[in-house]
Image (tube, each protein chain N blue to C red):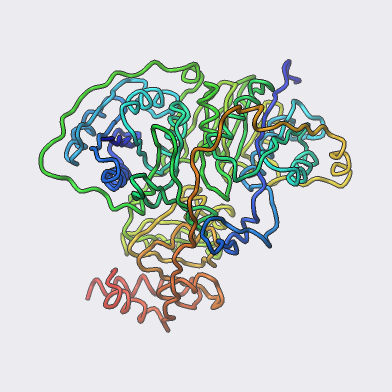
Length: 282
Length: 326
């Protein structure tokens, strides 16, 4: 059944230095900046998952080519990040917006203020975003945006089911279990790792028993070509958050202290003996 | 003089969470720079008064409590307006870096237009200003930032702050009214909490943790439970084990899961991916059992045993039991 008003979802995404090689980042000699040179740029994994969740929410899982609704991706970065936006468009997003700025001019407060302006202009039903970007690991933009626009939120989502028009049942990953929240749209959902499991997300067009392949979808070659023609608008940070600047500046960075490798024990008996008499932990 | 406010964390059963005591320690560490005192705010339904009385033994200037039926089950939309209202009288707002604090405090910060430093591993004073030290890049870097807003908001990583100890005397208690909520609160509804029932200690609090990787396959519990029982340890898992469905999601230890720092961490069949290491490298003693002698986990393990885990773990359980009996 076609919904009368299709769901419109805003998905903020960020490109980050390859998280699988995050141990290769360097700190400059002055300790004033993180140097990620030599690492590939990748879409923040949680944002990749948010995009997948948004796509699942705007389709019938059995017939994903017939899009039901609109997914708009937005990033805050220089022109070079348009590659990341095009990748999102190729995967299935409909439109992209790049807010021209640089990462060192941003913090979570500022991004949330700018996103508020975008939400007021775009009027989406839902913001779906990663719970955190794996570079700054700040985990705050979704929560802040929800407050700024007075929307309910469901953070760290492991599952989302569209129960009825404008109603989501969200399973949140919390300490000690899963917390189920029902939110009425418009709302903000931030996603955790398990959101891309096969049975995690169901739009109301998708049968409850339907199971996706685990993980995110990949763009076929024709979609990559077609994505070059999809709309990509540019805005400036100044027009979205006039007069605002970052308020959480970083003065310095350090590497964590490295643990040294210990010893190899020859067998279980030696292990127990050392844990008992040497480490005194048992 | 400026003061700090700690937001207490209660479980769904209205019992005080130990993570709160680490947040108190964070606030105390910030006091020399602030020059004032710390207070505690606890919100909840019936039973929250008991937690307030318990919190009165930690040396706070006052313990404020807001008890309302709509606060029985935590939702940020109901909590944030009251927290923000009370926070207006303070310079620093401190929460727990748990799924509770990480959900609530950024929302409160936005309401106060305040800057936020999440998941802090340290706080210090430099030139009279608070400097927040926090992990970034999955723990591969630490950044130190300042917060340039009249109210500063932070969450404290439990494993990095020794829990506060009770002191003599009792703090005065005071009730605060629940602040008016916004439209958001009327559009969110707590449905249920599917708590993982376990007799074992919680991962964040446990003195010992036994974690398993994908190598355990369907025998995750069969192999690891006897070892966890023998040690009184919490059970954890690598992301690979969770993704493969061998262990539940909230077992995950790592930068994107739980950060733990027990006295003893035993990694069984875990290769040592960067993001897993970020979640356990603060442990005092690390033991790795893996049949691959080249596994990266051995580079940081205090004691490494290169062995087939399906033989080594049962043997370890027997040895521990024999030691206890002897």
